[in-house]
Length: 336
Image (tube, rainbow, N blue to C red):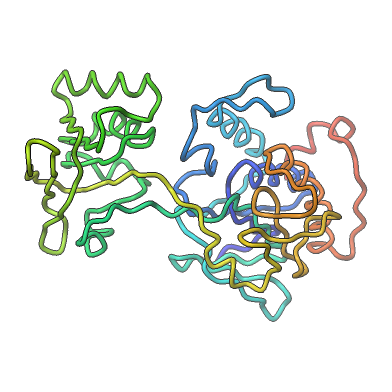
């Protein structure tokens, strides 16, 4: 079990900035995210997309913003549980919260901060009859450790940035890669498309467009797939792993069953400190709602700042909090 001051559900930009504001108050943070790396949508969906409304940055790439936030919070030594979704929440006898993830990891804290953006992201799965029986037995929706594909035969399906980027990255790791896409044109960054085309021309990968994977086969573990081409018919391919990368679908998930006041898929909060109807549980960023709410990253940063001021009193009810500017606190403020 991990014990901390703030258990933050969601490691997107708002959750990461909350670590900085909490760190200034000497509060420890542990972040939980269903994605395999910090950054939320910015890292998983559009890392190369420019953002124009971050103060001080006329333009910053989404992935670069996450890199900068990670550097900013590094002195406060936050800890992470990644690739796991929070499933359970219960109150303990000592008044704290106990969170349990989809893999049984437990985190205990007096304060829970829900910074889950649009909710937990779940992979969009292709309509293949045998798909579920091969999940975690050769079918992977999220790549957590590229090393497991060393010298393996892979079929990657998709036409967006994730499919293109992972094909490029894994081309030097896997023994063979086949990239399958339903259309001729790709939706990803032009530079990534050019790199994939070059890999195909050089014979380093097989590229099959106007096709899709329709069946899987194996004995306990995936051993092969059938690729149905629009004009060439069925193509049988031996494979160790099938990786469909069709994007992620946001869902509120188990959070919807925690007794929080909801407005559709948003969590209602008090704008005084962005606390929910349950004391000690806050919601910041795109997942909350209140009159005048704008779903902007910079609004999430503001909400995180006020939330931490209130959360301090839950962690240290007998201590007085004195607000100070970082310019007054000096560099020593940037450590726990």
